[in-house]
Image (cartoon, rainbow, N blue to C red):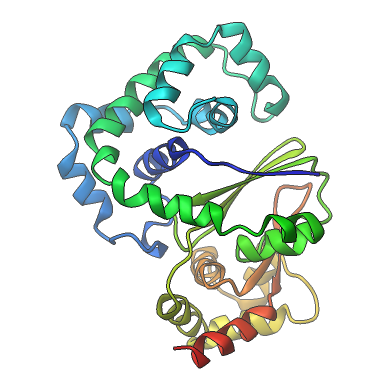
Length: 292
């Protein structure tokens, strides 16, 4: 299994654009709860309209593979490289990662041009102002990855870095780890055939990590959820049935437990997750409290 750590500011630019478009899990993130409205007031009305009118982010989701192959780490280099990349070569770079469910866009060249137009405006109107602050944080988190530990104990180390994702039984030939500032404290996973992209949160300070765990534990329902998965894993559907709660409430509790690193999350071939109580996180809490 080949493990890489992606060192490129471009992916963070892409993630922030995706966050603005999808507004996914905003209330669970460490960025300002008003981030969307603040960003909306900052960018032009034209750009806001172009982003909201995007039918989907299919090309953007695939473009992580292009970012990985790009010889430049900076945004301007990526923009120039992708704009000049021959269409046939771009198709060949993306082809291994499409599937029946997530196929190759028919209008690939048009999608590229639109992607370059919108992401360039996004970079100029939003990201460039925070780049000097975010870039060193990402670099620090890349350098903080223990390459030797990844080589000797890949699965346990990946689980630790991503605060819970377990891919040990997955048919994986390549893993790409990507630090993120915007999505702290959550990790994200994208599976493209035998390739897995794992976006892991930049390290937060001890006080914030302690609060994440203690707040997640300070709720009777979440303690019941953890108790239910001490001995065996549970699916989302099983938790809904077991707890007698709405899907929305279970989703909320799972996200809080995920952000605290209290869940071991195992992807399945059926494209759902299995959840277990991640006991090792309690030791982390003990260490955090002793050093508080």
